[in-house]
Image (cartoon, rainbow, N blue to C red; front, side, top):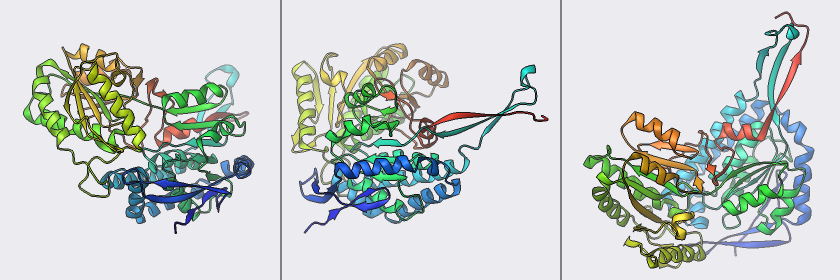
Length: 481
């Protein structure tokens, strides 16, 4: 008999009146049963977070840092258990799941470090003007209020960490809603936080249904919303609460640009391997996975067969097998959507060079060329293991092709030329440019976010803390400066 996993209400375990089942996208087996909070329990969590706001903001930095350090250490101790849980509920191959736990370890460690140095104050002399003689301005940052964090399914542990850890580091209470498909990994964080001395009410993890979110989004006691997910939902949230502070980490259709100077056999082998790996890792369910390859005409004919071979070499199958590279998508419906988009492109004249087959929730790693600009897969985020490859005549045309998208999250540029690297940084309309590698590279301490329809605001622990707080100036008078 499967036991019910409790949720976390104001720092303590609780169960509601209902439950829902979490099943494996690989084989449909029952992974866990999760308690659902009632409306009254959600209200209790919000009220508790609002009530503790001032006290939590005043909590000594060493207390918050110690709690974050504790979670980081405990994640290390439970790495294999948590990785297996991620694989079970998400379908992510175990090797990628282990990497995700390692990243969450770093996020909590970075947050502990930032908690110790954040809000130290910046002093500014005001006697640079006669009217400011004897005056000093001291600027510090304070929480804007309780944070509502809404996490997606594709990184069910680490993207919960990216909501919770910066909030605690900044002294902002947080209510986290994990994704309905993958709540178990996020609830593990609650187990570890419960072992710390953080104030009751400073955090809750509530696996509420998506249809309960509008009421939480509208609640005036939750002035900060940090959302990671689809463009449609993210902007609907922002449009519904224009006076709230919203950080939106949305979609992308990442481009990898391979320029003419990246032409040796070793260069092209490296580019093809990285492109194949990171168009398919997480089943392509990453907003910075490689979806588009734009290759200079001088290297296109040598690069394309390398990409196809590297994609066909990806090992698909049981995500619990350590040799598996590509597991299932999060659901069969998701795989059917990808299948329909590929078929639309092929019907419109695209050439299918690899993959193109679905088996339940799994979709084979796929390569397309000659894809018409008007088909869905050219315009939208596929969020599946599908790659398109196109030819460009020179740097300017390649960068223009990369920019020909409503999205702008990250781009990768394979080049050895430092001048080209700086031109790419200026020209590409994205939140991050990665030189010599794919757009899928993310270090969890760096600023991460997009341009255009890929969202607003930045994650990365320090940068999320800035989003969760505001500057307040203290002017001291009558000083002998």
